[in-house]
Image (cartoon, rainbow, N blue to C red; front, side):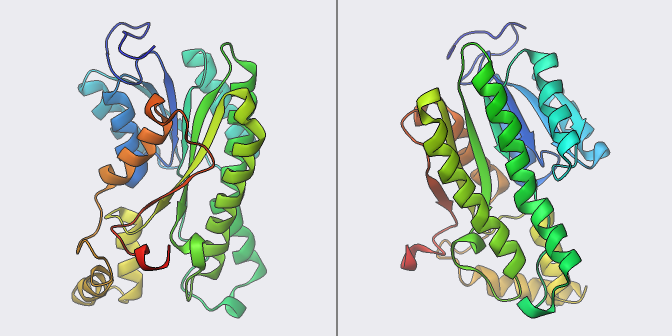
Length: 276
């Protein structure tokens, strides 16, 4: 399908004629990925909890001549995820690509022994179970459709590679995302389904800004100091732009990555280079 018009006849690009689903698509990396998929001709479904921001991204895509729709979805809720994938297929006929990007900062800002059981359950639901639920329904659809197959990218984190002080539960969930990704990649490769992970470092997103704000107690000057200390650990000397992470995820979903599966693509400005 590459380089041809999709059946609405409005876009030409790498993903022309293809359907892409992005969870957490209303802001940050997810928003950037939704815009990137649309620029390359995909029909895009944006899933998130925040309807206002989600619809704003749809309008942005449509204003640029693309095709998109928003679906309100809590990825930790099985019925929501089932409805999301079913609705995508009802609207556009199939599912070719998915970026499972939705996440929260549940599971941070405390020492390991200080979390409650409720906090554990909430962190895992948002950051691990949600990815598994999306994988389950996306894979089932990709197996059933004709022609079968597709590409899935799950967003993990540097914290999932080695843990982080005061981030045990979030880190554990993101490590679980990597194991899910590698397992599914091996199981479904013969069926034409590729599954990879985006291992994201620090990107200037509302989620990271919230971390800086929390770490500084809400003091703007202190938040800038926290940010500066963080940037000091990054060899490239800056936070990443969301579109830089999105470009990696979109490439992993493209035909250019047709021989790539089970891969953890680290995009972190060099932070982890010394231990890789």
